[in-house]
Image (cartoon, rainbow, N blue to C red):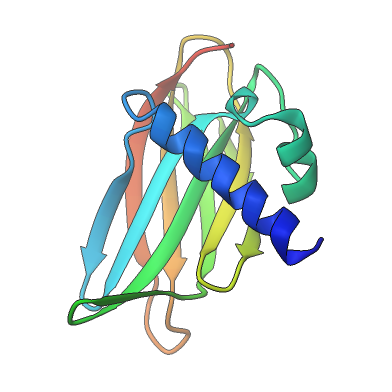
Length: 149
């Protein structure tokens, strides 16, 4: 994938996030010199051509979790790589491991993971984000209700 196509893909994903802000409110957790930004949304929010370019499967019963890590140094924030793992669990304790794909666009690095759900279902997401291999991973946990589109 060339740089322009990759940038356009990222821009479209970012635009979806911004346009759907009430539904996809981005959240962040600060841990020392790192900010971990995350959000989850239905995979059908991504256009088919963009989904194909970034390796996402679209489905009315599939959601995405998006994670990015910034290293903060004064007023400067720089995207950094991390090891990201996670699990999605419903209210009756059925769980799915989430595999994350790294999307590296130079100035922007983010991780996309997919998981399934049924309509009107609350999913608890438990993420481990490790930006520094010499330090323990940071835990991020949240829950969200998902609807079929």
